[in-house]
Amino acid sequence: MNATGVSSCLIVTGMPGAGKSTVTRLVAERLARSARLDGDELNRMIVNGFVWALGEPADEAARQVELLHRNLCALANNFAEAGFTPLIDAVIPSREELDFFLDLLTPREVLFVVLTPGIEACRSRNSLRAPRERFDFDGYDALDAGMKHELGDTGWWFDTASLTPAETADRIVHEARDRALVN
Image (cartoon, rainbow, N blue to C red; front, side):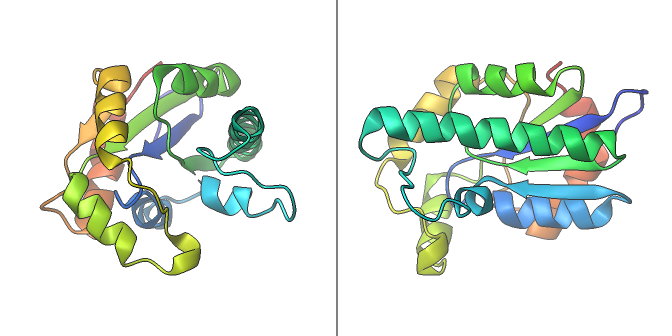
C-alpha cells in the first residue's frame, strides 16, 4: 500500500459495528504481505484484571487502553520491519489517541480510515454479533459526535452505508494511499 521506501501502516477505526474487523480482514486478504492487528483480540490476552475502555476504575481503564495502543504499535512496527503491511483495527476516538499512535509508528506513513456507515447501521450490526464480540454500551451518539469533533478533518472519512464489505475493502486497497495519509 505504499509507493515510497517507507513502510506504511493502515489504521481502520469507527464506532462498534462500523465494520472494522470485517473490512480489515478483507483488505489484508487482498495484499501480498499483510498482518491484521485486532485491538479486541489483543485485549482478550488479559486473562484476569481486564477493565474495558469505559470501565471502572477509570484510571486502570485508561492505563489498559494505553497498554493496548502500545502493543498494537509495537506489533505493527515489528510486522512492517519484516516486510508486512500492518492493518490496525481499533476504536480511536480522539486526536490525542491518534497522535499517540502516530508517535509510536514513526517513521512509518500512516493511512487512517474512519468507517462511517451511520449510527443505526452500527447499532444494528453490533446487536447481531455473538455476545463475546458485542460492544455493549449506549454511547453511539456521543462517540459519533466526539469523533467528528476530534478527528473530522483527519484521514479518510469513508461512508460505507451503501457498500458491501468486499466493495469497501476494494476501495480501501485502491484509494487509501491517496485519501487517508496522515503523516
